[in-house]
Image (cartoon, rainbow, N blue to C red; front, side, top):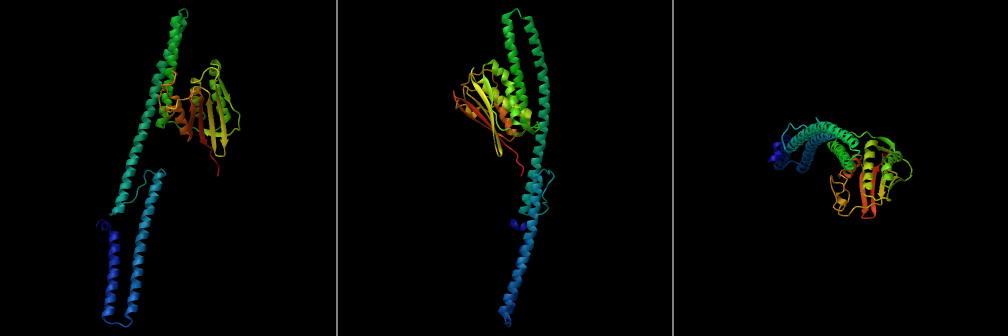
Length: 345
């Protein structure tokens, strides 16, 4: 039987068997020789043997409990970051076989973690190289395009095509930048530099970023006043996230429409609400708007690249926040960003 592979279990059962054998032998001798008060002595022997068995079991299970506590301690240490934590498994039996498998699993996890770290480092270096390689030709193309525009001042048709070329170059640059940002977030190569910042100032900076465009397109961006609260975030990345949502709203609005930015606070929660009265989102598209490069068959937008909302969602989730959307076609869209406020106990 596999249970008796372990020497300690085998010794326990042998010791219990010997105690019982000794009790039976003593009882038989007392009864055979018709010893006076034999029943009393048999009872006394039974009690003594029972105490001996209890002591043996207590010592065995105390030792097993200590082994389990050591194993739990090593597992807890590993979960806390000690990659060298291992469970002693230098004995035989099913329990030590389990410990050996746990150690094997730890080794596999460490190998995977090391491979992932190496992959992230490789991806980070590759992203940096790609960024450098793409920025240089894009900058050169923009310069060439500007020179051609000056030379083509007297040729309206050529100037029109050069203007379109400039717009496409801007789209390529925006696409490259968005791809680099979202890939860095995926790779975990960005360390968010969180600090307490004013919610009102953060949202005001987002409003100012798009104010000129809104005025040019006869659209309105309003910022609701509210009780200010310190918000623990990476201001640069959070500005990017909220800005992408505001930009998405402007892309799907007509002249005369508005987008409002507001916030509200609760004892342990902050919500940022971006609401517009634009074209809205079709119910068919709602489950897919955070997918990369997703394009709706109902959308008339030809400028979007399908990375703004996925990037915003990735940034918000990197801040342990959530993003929800409520929309009706023709009635506008509301994005609600929810973040927990750290509390001091």
